[in-house]
Amino acid sequence: MTQTKPTGAETQEPVTPRVPLVRALLRNPTMVTFAALLVIIAAFSVLAPDTFTQRSNFVQLAQNVAILTVVSVGTTFVVITAGVDLSIPSGIVLGEVFAVHALQLVGTGGGDTAADVAADQTKGWYVLVALAGALLAGLVIGTVNGVVVAYLKVPPLLATLGTLGAGLGAALILQDGVNTATYALDPVGHGEWIPGVPNLIPIALLVVAAGFVLLHMAVFGRHTFAIGSNPEAARRAGINVERHLLKVYLIGGTAAGFAGFLSLAYFSTTSIGGHSTDNLQAITAVALGGTSLFGGVGSIIGTLIGVWIPAVLKNGFVITGVQPYWQDVAVGLVLIVAVWIDQLRRRSRDRG
Amino acid sequence: MTPVMGAYGVVKTFGHVRALRHASFEAFPGEVTALVGDNGAGKSTLTKILSGVFAPDEGEVRIDGAPVRLADPHDAKRRGIETVYQDLALAPDLDAAANVFLGREVRRFGILHNHPEMRRRTATAFRELGVGLVQDMRAPVAAFSGGQKQSVAIARAAMWATKVILMDEPTAALGVIQTTKVLELVERIRDRGIAVVFISHNLPQVMQVADRIEVLRLGARVARFRRGEADVERLIAAISGAYANETGEGAR
Image (cartoon, rainbow over all chains, first blue to last red; front, side, top):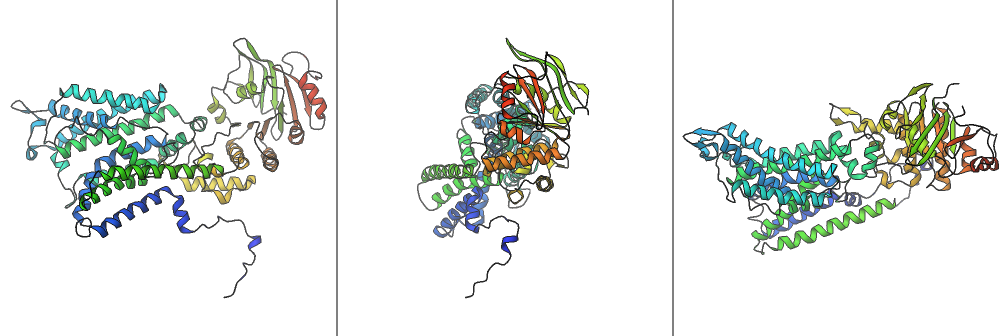
């Protein structure tokens, strides 16, 4: 073996030091989470090769996580501003309730309303009516959150805790405490625009794509990161921080309202007692995906991966006959480790 | 020569405190003008008036000899006046180019940002200014040393300023070598014809870098020196009130 001296190295410009591939990947929180997801999938593929790896199982999984994916995209924006949105369940439930109320306002003759139609008699514009209602609910919740957090300077944890309770209460009042069933949205919730792929999957993917463009490619996303990183710097750079925060909470609320629309379409009923832990699930997914709860750092792809880890764990435990409650334990531990790693990374980086 | 920026007979009162009583100040293109004075002399208030944070109660601010009313700091920026703040005002999680162009992004299709272009322009500007960060263009500025961060902040101001850069204690938190580099950067910016206003407590440093020195005491200008006219002792005398080469309120 001959050793060749690197000739002329002294005269060269300094270049970015090459780090080993594995270390470079470990520095990227999204890659760590992605590796964890692959390990989990590989483990269950070995343990239950016949059932877990079937295409139908993955399609089912994707459909199950679709609604959570939509709200988690919105939550990613909020968390990057160093905020939090606990009001997601009220956004979803109010979205469902506003949607059925909108359908009930639309008559079909004979005293029936659009909420009462059978799945095969619904019309495309009923879907739009319900969508408008659901989005309106999301906008209302998002506006309240945004105004209270950005302009009244109430800490987001408490502001959104308030709208969580208030929104759920308002939903119960509007429904007199009873759920409403509707089949008007069946074409969305149970159709397959792409054969073999339930509609919720492409819808969620579209939301992910839109979130990706807005966060990572648009000036809006750049300002979102800047505000989470140092709001004073953003303000001095001429960014209207309050108005931007309002928009971010509007995105969070609208995502929740849209998730309510999807939930109503999929379950064919409102669920005024449901979705109560969707906020925590979304925050878990966002944190697992490498988005820092201190703001300024995060990614949509990470969130997408973070949504899948708990879902795959639960699915795998069910298939392999482990008590599915272990999922909660496992996700809790993984979450703590993920945030701890984020802390370590942050400290070592700030030391510079 | 007309000062590129000046303040004339400026009064600013906060409640019962008269921070500035007929203070005047002038900065010329291609010169470093140091603004010195003891704590409470009114340096910060005057700087904030020049950068558009405060409006003067009396007196006027002129740019290129014409009286102006600066509505806010962004108005000042639009007129080519940039400020480097003591606490840097960088977003630590963003890279240098994102910080340099924050709020002034190069856009594509109206809403998307063109990061490669911003990175290219930043690298070019940094090279021209001799800020040696070009190989770190992808790193968040949190990974930089204090001197590097200050260099990014000053280079950002230099990239956007067409007339004046106001620097409030730009070397206060830096070590010896880092301070030297920042001062070199200040001189290069001056040599481009920008007026640099340099606020500092460090008198030897002021003597080294300033082409002119204006001394503020109790809210009014008490002395002006050209490079070489004053030594540290005379400066201290002026700052403490034992020496003055201007008389009367609102001297011009």
